[in-house]
Length: 150
Image (cartoon, rainbow, N blue to C red; front, side, top):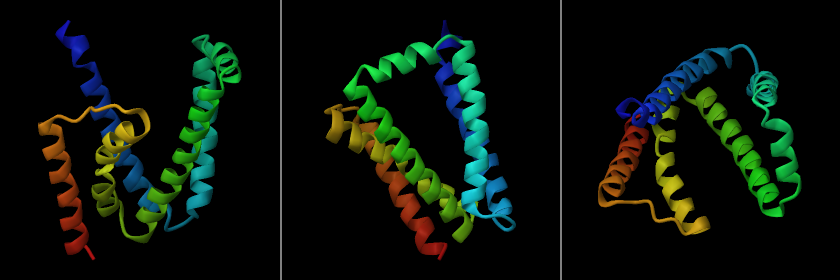
């Protein structure tokens, strides 16, 4: 039971580790090819692999029908796709303009914006005093990194 309760933490840590590999690989890749080409190639492979996995698990067809019959879900998937494109292009150009480490440390402020948009868009109040203080500390840390990393 405890093992299953901690799985979210293990998966989030694994994602963080692989984002680290992605960022540093991208920094070196952008010295040779454009950000747009790299994103296009990555996105193509991401599409192929995830479409295959969704199909294999029997979710693709049902999910496409569900999306097609709900205006709200179509709006949410469109918003998520547009946000992904803007975020992906922005962080990759940030990495190519400065470096992966500094871009990553600034990007780590995104949980602050998750809480902000969860509240503004969906009325979810997910902040406790501890998470609010932690978020402010991370945001201040990013500002310090920016100031000294110019």
